[in-house]
Amino acid sequence: MVQWQVHGEREIYTSPWVSLALTTVEPPGLEPFEHHVVRMPGPAAGCIVTRPVSADDSNRAATNETGDEVLLLFRHRFITDSWGWEIPAGGVDAGESPADAAARETLEETGWRLTNTPEPVTRFHPSNGLSDQTFHIFHAKGAEHVGPPSDPTEASKIEWRRVADVRALIASGEITDGLSLSGLCAAFTLGVLN
Image (tube, rainbow, N blue to C red; front, side, top):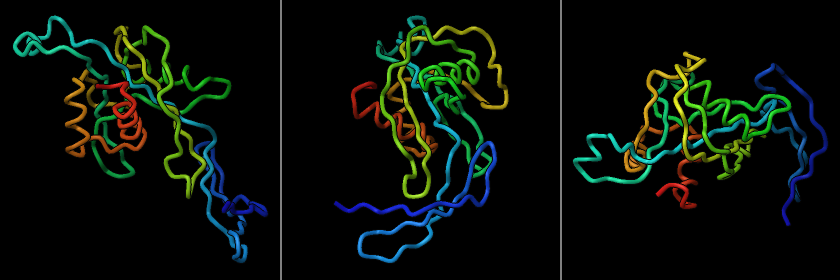
């Protein structure tokens, strides 16, 4: 078994959002060296929210389409200066479960309240060679619209998109957010989305 030994860590920078540390590590057969590590204060959670294609949808009537729609946000990310579609997601607050955070973030970012308990899809570390960040992805069937988002800074558009549209958005590079892309791909792979 190949396992790196950790000999210590010193913090270089810290804030409520992120910390940077130098960790002294020793790979098998090599001399110890310092490795930069980004530490996150807590995990994040996202929710793939689905509902059946609306019965009053004129496109459904024309195509006789059935199946599900997925709730997505279209937003700008200033760090990468990019626009794209994302699932509702955000940080897990202290004392909050990841499932509760996924439900809260969905309501805050979209104005849609989940009508069923979110079920786990996957958990992953998006950049485990550099960061200890953890993402929890959930799936919830059904939501009710309760009003505008309480956080109007998150999205330019909020839309229900057919599952086939979501596949097309992934294929065309319009979903590039790591949490959303990995979560949606896992949902397709595991049969949560068909």
